[in-house]
Image (cartoon, rainbow, N blue to C red; front, side, top):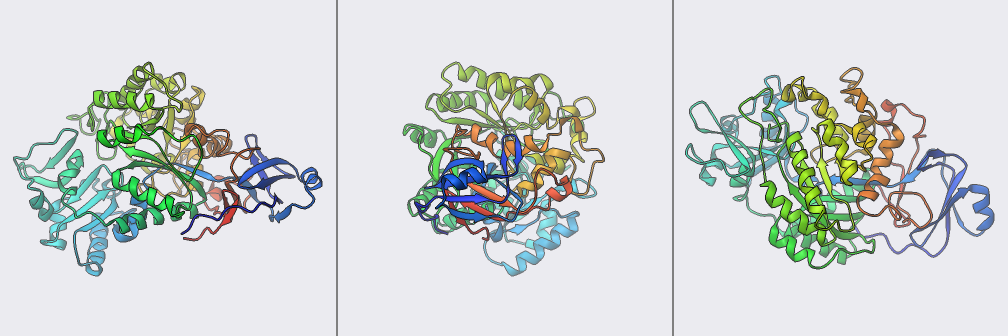
Length: 534
């Protein structure tokens, strides 16, 4: 899918829809664009009079807004979905096993790989076992990622290839779950996942490029014009650069390097590009803890439903602190994965110390920020740390989050209103493919804190709901501000790039239920209209 050609020199006047501004929808306004930039936003009549020869694009009502910016996604994993068994949304273990059986029968070669299973959706809420897979797979190794990407389910053949047995110790930052007899049961958490994953044959460079292009195309189809790709390794970085040089990136990509110290030092020496382009290295993605669903998120007190653990430190916080300081001093952006309240407090503490050694030009970020004490939520704004959150995590996880946290601290979960009231920059993402990339589903989740079925009644901790204006801002100007691009990205104003999305719906008036059903209508990237289809 080639990059849109250079935009024509002719001026275009786009009118007929409400224009979404920082104040919300504005009727009777138009946008004037030329050479990929917005020349003006103003009343249709005055812009038409000032530019009588402008090419006119008349829209049939609806809303014209900045293209969405995906604040947190995993593009290669999203693009790889068509090559793996998809286990997302399945409600029982037997359904999950049947899906695996059917896919395996039609894809009989190599490792059996997939993702998306979630034991919290199943009646028992219990982790599956290697033995469950063995019946289907025999000697064919299998590795299936949990929906959050922080646990894998493997079969006995995969455990044998990796040499994992009763005496194998937990790696630092990970856990090998075991049965009552001390035998590995097939579930590996966080750093333990790599014990098996490193034995999976790597994909080719051509396959990697294909996955990246497929992931970007699927995001563009959802109305995104830019993405923050979190955790790009050396091969992914090289693939992105080949695609960028070939003009084959369909939307803008801001890459956050995987936390590989050598790769980080090599890249940070080059200096972050100041000019907005279709590909740039933006920062480094760090992991402090795991995920709440697999009890790997690091908590201040033990889990209410498993008191023997507080979760995991996936990376030693002192290592994160040292490398985050290096990242900031080099002018790049640390993006720290922190889900539990202990991880978020530690992330804020270490960033506060690191910023004293040099703040750089872009603000540090905390990714997910799911369980945060009220005291720490207020620190985000004071310290100038971006709260990068994914609203659909709240509506996907609400049914079991209280069990993990217990009644005394459940109100720490997903504190979006506290972030806003504390003055923090709020940046929205989907964490795709962990969640559906559809931004309209996320906007409705932010506004209601209910899932598509309307649960829980009244919303999960409804005092933390956001307004529609706040939610759309977090998906546009919030992400642009988080990227250090507040003046030229994520906004409809003079001088900004002409990355535009039109939808048929009047976004200022429709209900949250209708909002979930909105689909992109037309999309402009860098001033050129592009197809939405994959």
